[in-house]
Image (cartoon, rainbow, N blue to C red; front, side, top):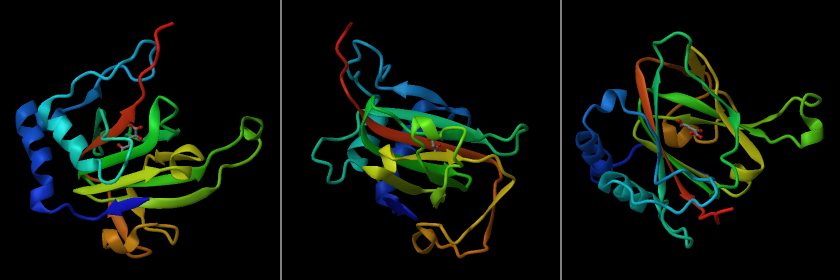
Length: 199
Ligand SMILES: O=C(O)CCC(=O)C(=O)O
């Protein structure tokens, strides 16, 4: 798992281009650029230039190729009810690797052990680690973090950095620090969606 604290000006450029190309960045939310991943007959669709550039930048050393799918989520942390992301895995529609670029407000993501079907409702999922999602950071998780754990953003007014924070040094935070949730956050979730045969 990699969680980089700050992206340099040069690396940041594609996201800035995206912001200008799409216009109303503050309220932007695009479900599934690249097509309806996971649906029967899915074949990756061309991405807008800014999203393709982001995906290429996030590809790093993955031999399977660059992400071909982008999800843009908007969170208004000043709104009620407070936005949150329920614990989930990103599932089999994608290669087991997710890259998330965070922009705007900070928050914390929680990774928990994924329960086996017979454990659901019986065993409390144990937290494996938390990750501080600082603005202008890139989180990449794959393998067991992708398939054997859920990830979630709990509803909260603020986050307190805990001892299980996996990227405290990189994110420039220390145990006990309070990260207030204020204003808007946008995330760009980049994954490689698998083609699916038609039924
Ligand atoms: O916004 C984020 O950082 C996480 C979003 C997420 O988990 C998802 O869209 O599957």
